[in-house]
Image (cartoon, rainbow, N blue to C red; front, side, top):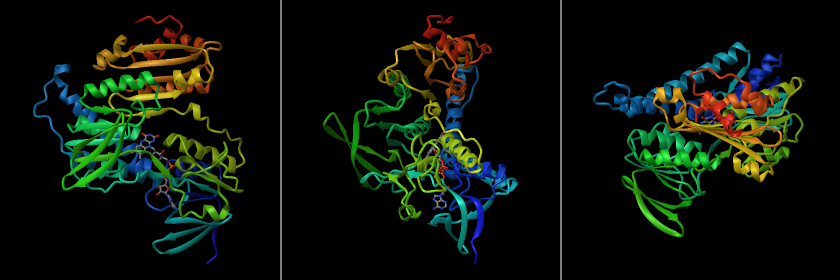
Amino acid sequence: MAAQTFDMIVIGAGPGGYVAAIRGAQLGLKVACVEREHLGGICLNWGCIPTKALLRSAEVFHLMERAKDFGLSADKIGYDIDAVVKRSRGVAKQLSGGIGHLFKKNKVTVVMGEATLAGKGKVTVKTDKGTEELSAKNIVLATGARARQLPGLEGDGKRVWTYKDALQPPHMPKKLLVIGSGAIGIEFASFYNTLGAETTVVEVLDRVLPVEDEEISAFAKKQFTKQGMKILEKSMVKQLDRAAGKVTAHIETGGKVEKHDFDTVISAVGIVGNVENLGLEALGVKIDRTHVVTDEFCRTGVEGLYAIGDIAGAPWLAHKASHEGVMVAELIAGKHAHPVKPESIAGCTYCNPQVASVGLTEAKAKEAGYQVKVGRFPFIGNGKAIALGEPEGMIKTVFDAKTGELLGAHMVGAEVTELIQGYVVGRQLETTEAELMETVFPHPTLSEMMHESVLDAYGRAIHF
Ligand SMILES: Cc1cc2nc3c(=O)[nH]c(=O)nc-3n(C[C@H](O)[C@H](O)[C@H](O)COP(=O)(O)OP(=O)(O)OC[C@H]3O[C@@H](n4cnc5c(N)ncnc54)[C@H](O)[C@@H]3O)c2cc1C
């Protein structure tokens, strides 16, 4: 059978691939998107969305526990973990289904099956019904990533979980060990700890949430500890002994190894790109560890072959993947495309308290040679935060003392994952401290703290 021909074939229907496919179709390209498992990729099915649904249940549970603080009563507060998980799976399913509708609306051809590159411009897809041949001048790799499995710490789906198991737990942990305190590890730690699991987090680096500003990490750690989490920094899980109903972890801290028993372990030690069995080697595509090497326009060096999202490396975030998807589609359609600026991509962690940031930390700004002005504002100084019963948190801003450029913003506290976008827009528009100070922020809102933090950097904070 002759190959079906398209202008653009996208491999993978995660937030990178499906967005690239839709944008390409909007621009008049004939587009096919190949997906082997589920529309929406990890993000909608096993990542961003179902975790946020779980965390919402934990948040409501936590608020119910605090009912008295608000003059309310709620007796016999409890939860049904199966129902909590069922809701999360339902939310994921709803959104994944939505991608099918969007593809239909935009006339994107969906091919369900496993794709391999069969040469320049050629894709072979193994489907339930056999093999399909597709061809296009432009191919976009958006095959994403999966959990990193460290030797000895591999998930087994029973007592040692990867994120997929943690999203559909076979049991509710009583004594939980989370290995790794990046966004994924801390979100699960926060979820299970809030629901009552005795939770220990082990981080090999010197602080939790190690990519965040040091002050934010320290603040978050204090809150986690207050909530009963045990945090072991500069520590490493060397070995897991698996037995019926328990796992003994050998944890090294300061050269000393101690053994601790847990009933459940979540391994959240990073991700690896899905680069295997795609036919990349035959085409001469460069791979660095587990990621395809690309230039700023996501070009792989092989004519007509692009790589976007998690397979193309850090930051491993859905919005980065989607933005690259739009850029590549526009490039292919002959439009003026803008490379993604990594330093303008915000990172959000939906633990309790939430953490969000964009740009340089204070330490990184200094390392880069900037003379900085730093502003801070605590939630306790904000009327809305107090009215919400959320007085714990802070907003920190870092400016270039010479030019007034906003180099970075760092937040911890309620709803900061929604607030951060204000600073992202500011950075995109290359705003300065003067413009931010002149901007009117509505009252009473948490966003007023963003204003106050800027004012503080210049000695002008009003409410603290
Ligand atoms: C637990 C968890 C929570 C997360 N939370 C957040 C968050 O809150 N915010 C955020 O921004 N990011 C979050 N992420 C990261 C986010 O999910 C990823 O950055 C994002 O999904 C990357 O998108 P992508 O399109 O590159 O790849 P993916 O979403 O991984 O999609 C790739 C798709 O390609 C398909 N595929 C792979 N190989 C083939 C093949 N050969 N043929 C056909 N199809 C193939 C896969 O089945 C998959 O559907 C989270 C991740 C996890 C694991």
